[in-house]
Length: 97
View 1 (cartoon, rainbow, N blue to C red):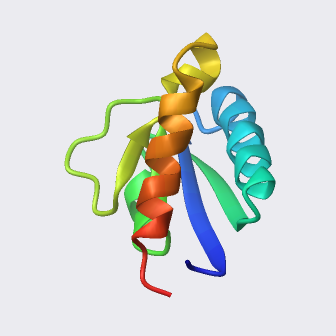
View 2: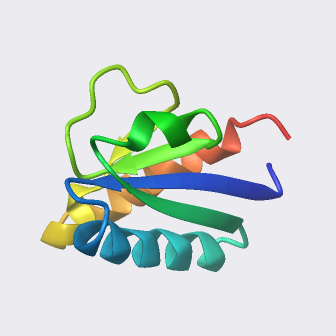
């Protein structure tokens, strides 16, 4: 598994919602022994940072993301979080080292 995962967190404005999602993603990855760096951006600006990340977690609709993407709305709604976590962990497990 990759040693340091770069996760791009995307929401409409890149501020409030992405901050909450970033905290939850980092906590979950830490619980699984995965070191991660997160960066929060708005949906309008995400493409400039997407090439430098391993994974995108977004609460906004993104068309044709250049990297694997997981919808992170479950972190806001409080339902379906385990399935979202599993999807993120699966993608990370498939990343080259």
